[in-house]
Image 1 (cartoon, rainbow, N blue to C red):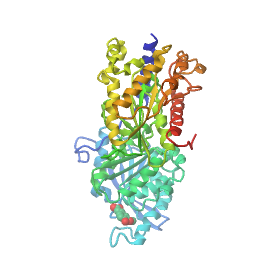
Image 2: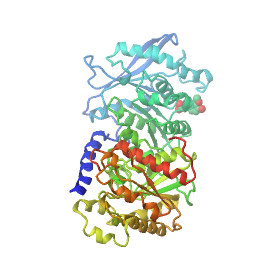
Image 3: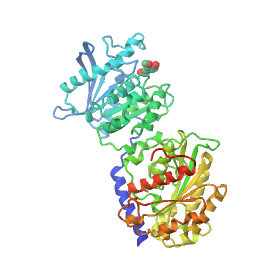
Image 4: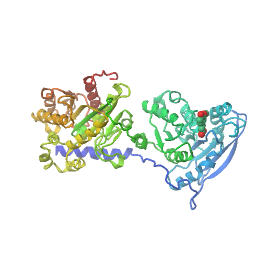
Length: 561
Ligand code: FER
C-alpha cells in the first residue's frame, strides 16, 4: 500500500499540473499559409496619413483591420516594421501579411488584431531611393522611435477602435525593422508587452543596452521573439542578443530556421509571432521551440570540461513534485542525455538536450539533479558544462540495480512498476550504463548521485548492496576503482516526519563501506506532506546540497551559496 501510494499520488498530481501549464507550441508555417483563399472573410488594407510633429510633415502608414472589424469592439495593435530597402508598403509587396493573417484568422489561430505598417524612416524624404545606407537615412530609423510613440500611436488610437494598454500593443519587424522593434520595444517596456525581431540588422542595440535590467524586462514583457535564417549574414546580431538573454535568464523564443536574409524567413516570423501575441503566455513552452533542442556540436574526443554525472534511485530521484516555470529556463551549459524516448517532448533516447525537467521520464517531476546541475554550472569555471544521465524507478528496491540479480526482482515486480520497467527494456541498470557510455563519448564522468533507500528501510545490508552496484558501474564504464565520488542523499528527514527517516542512520554509514561515498543531508528539506517525498522547494534545496558536496570534491569552491 505504501509503495503504491508512493507512485500514484505524484502521477495524478503531476498530470493535473502539467495539463494546466502546457502551452501549444506554434509550428513553422505550412505550404499555402500565405496564399489568397476564397470562401473566407478578409481583412481590409488602407493607407492612413498622419501629421508627425517629430518630422514636421505628413507621413503615410498602411493599416490592416481584421475581418469583421467593428467600432463596437476594441482591438490590440501590432506595429509591423520594414527593412532598409523598403517603406510602408514593403510588407504588402513582399510579405502578403493580409493573406497570412486572414488565413490564420479563418483557422481561429490568432486574436483579431489591427496591424499598422508604418514608414520607419522618420525624415521628410522617406522613400527608399538613392543610397539607402546614407548616414542620414540610417539615422532616421532611430528617429522613428519618437514619431512612433508621439505621433503615430496617438493617431491610431484616436482614429481606430483600439485597446490602449501595453498588453494590447506589439511591435515586430524585419531586419532594420527588427532592430527597431527590439530597440523601441525593449526600451519602452511600459508601452509594449510583445516584441519580435526577425533577422534583426546592425541597428540592433547591444544586449546590455537593450536589456540593462534583466529582472525588469522579465517581469514587464509578455513575449520576446528573436528569429533569423541560419545562413543570414546578420545572424550575429540575433545570436548575441539571444546569448545575453540566455545568460541572464530572460525568457524568449530564439527561432533559427534554414534560410537567408529574405521574406521566406520574415513571413514565417509573422506567421508564428502573430499566433503567440495577445494571448496567455507560458514561458516554459519556449524551450520547446527547436533551437533549444539543438544538440551541442558533435565532438570527436571527449571534452574534458564537460562533466557528466550519473543519477539513479527511486521516486525522489525520479522527480516527484511538480516543477514550475522558473525551473524550466534552459542553460546552454547544462545538458541531459535523454534516457527514454519522449515524442511529446520531441526528445529521443540517447541524444543530448538542454536539461530542463522532466529529466527522468516523459512525465516525471522535478529531480534533485535539476538544481544539482544548475548549481554546478554556476560554480564551475566559465565554459564548463554539466551533463546528466538519469535513470530512476519510483518505489524500487536497491536490488533493481544489481545487474546479477535484478531479474529475480523484476520477475516479482509489483504491477505498478511494470510500465516503468518497460521503458528501460526491463533493465534500468543496463540503460544507465548504455546512456553513460554514449555520454562518455562527449564528456568525462565525474561522479554518481544516488537517492534511494525508502524501499529498503531497515535493511542493514544496504551499504553492501550499494557498494556492489558502485563497483559494477565503474568497472562497466572502464573507470578505475574508487576513482569518482558517490553522493547518497538522505530520505525525507525525521524533522519533516519522514516515515522512512530511520533509513538515514543506515545511509549515513555508507562512507564506512565505500571510501569515496559522501552523504547529503536532507535536514530541513521540506516534504509534500506525505512524509515520503520532497516538495518542489525541498527537492531544489536537496539538489543544491548535492552540488555543494560535489564541488569541493572536484576541487572547486562555492561562490554562490
Ligand atoms: C547593415 C547591413 C544591413 C546595415 C543595415 C542592414 C545599418 C539592413 C538590412 C535590411 O534592413 O534588410 O550594415 O547597417
